[in-house]
Amino acid sequence: MVFPMLTLDILRGLADPTRLRIMRLLASMELAVGELAQVLEQSQPRVSRHVKILCDAGLAERRREGGWVFLRAAVGESAVTADVPPPLGVAVARMLAVAEREDQAFARRCAEDREHLDAIRSAREGSAADYFARHAEQWDELRSLHIADGPVETALADLLGQSPLGRLLDVGTGTGRMAQIFAPRAQRTTAVDKSPEMLRIARARLQHLPAGSVELVQGDFTALPFADGSFDTVLFHQVLHYAQAPELVLAEAARVTAPGGRIAIVDFAAHDREELRHNHAHARLGFADSQIAAMLGDAGFVPDGERALAGHELIVKLWTGLRRDDSIAHLDPLHARRGSAPPPSTRKAAQP
Image (cartoon, rainbow, N blue to C red; front, top):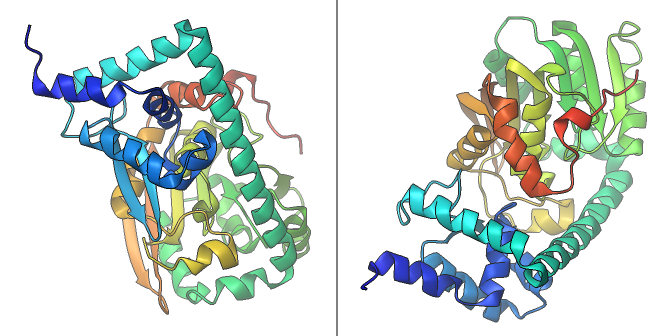
């Protein structure tokens, strides 16, 4: 029997234990090639050769970001690619999942890989936390080096429109500036940040607001301590570029957003300022419109607005989206693949 060339390419692409491990890692999230090299404990040139084979077979896709190259799976339920027809791509992804479930040795290796990846990312997040603690007092000044706050705040208010914001969640509130600006338009504002130092400053800034109108919560944007559908508006202001896995952060945001609720993201357009990784703990060098649209769509939002604001050297972008009614059901597979967050039904609302 003669197999179609595409099928042969896929089978050849999968015919290596390392490439099978890579595909299982990519089933959960987009990864930098350097991260894969660390997890696999192989040289970056060797991993790059495996990556080339997977990409040539249509099983994975590359994306360059400054000096880093990121890799994502090109097969599966949410993959969008012209190289592998969706039915075949879904079948390949399901076959790999079954292989991990049924092959105990392979399952152990995949679990070890994910634990190693978690350790690598935890170390990076620790470095970012140290950075936030060191610069908490100067945070607004540091942020203003990129673009004046006024035009961004005006554009954001315009994109959100004149209607009330309902229950507002400010993710990564920092010094509380966004919470302060938009609290008058909200029924109630919740400001969450991982850094106790940032929350201390935000508390001082927000103390003049009416009692009970603002709640400050310490929490991680990858596992928000709130029940499903708790908020009507979710805001990320210059926060998403700190996320090691922004697609999972947006999936978590969708979980806590009520059907018909809105998300607003303020961040940098894609750029090549590599020094921001090292000097300011940026995990991502901004985002292209297509990246944001894809991540919002995968998370369960419908993109409905965007705007660009030229800064000194960087362009600030604003994106908004509406949460679909089927978003919670849509997100379950994302949480399952992630493997670290509890299922939505087990989450508890934060206590005031």
